Image (tube, helix red, strand yellow):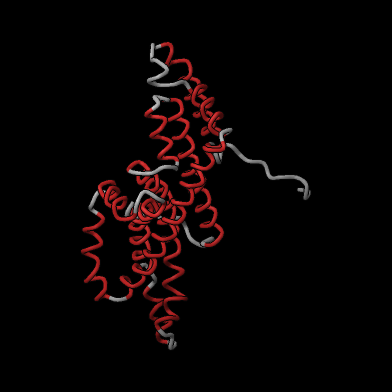
Length: 267
């Protein structure tokens, strides 16, 4: 094979490369023509052509990009805050038994509280600005990352730990050379779901009280009975989640290239 030639993709080995776009096209065509055929009004279920028309209109509006920027920043800051707290607490819980016995019951009890119920409190405590949405995003993305960090650090091979201990390795060396590499696949599994939860948390916070953001825009389109516009915003939110998922997966494959993917714990 010459350097200019590219390896051909065998669709028999990766049929999803054909099936995914095929299913999308079939569903869109069926939706486009079935809704009018069954007498479904456009204000109840707009056709894909109307939704993408509304999306094109929104993308040409500079105000839409400001809403998108606000939601992105809220999600990113909340995600970083939640991940940072989960890494610190997860490491402490997995390494110190007293901390685990003291704090884990409270952490589990807090996780059982519906996060949507906390959004009005955060608005009261932190105001209608970005801070309340950042806190909401951090709280929702915190627990999946925390659980995966704890499980990952505990999944280290006992034989490797014993061998390093015999050769005089201290607790930090064992953590750096065995526990941390073992935890990385779990960590990225938690990050994968945590970033999507962060976007969800930011939008939920904007539903409760905001003056900008995609959640606020979604409410405005609802008030104006612009159903196609609502679907367009939902398409953008789905695209954000998908892009975030792809970025985490890409980083996972580049950083933790030696490990297989792990099932997300605590999702």
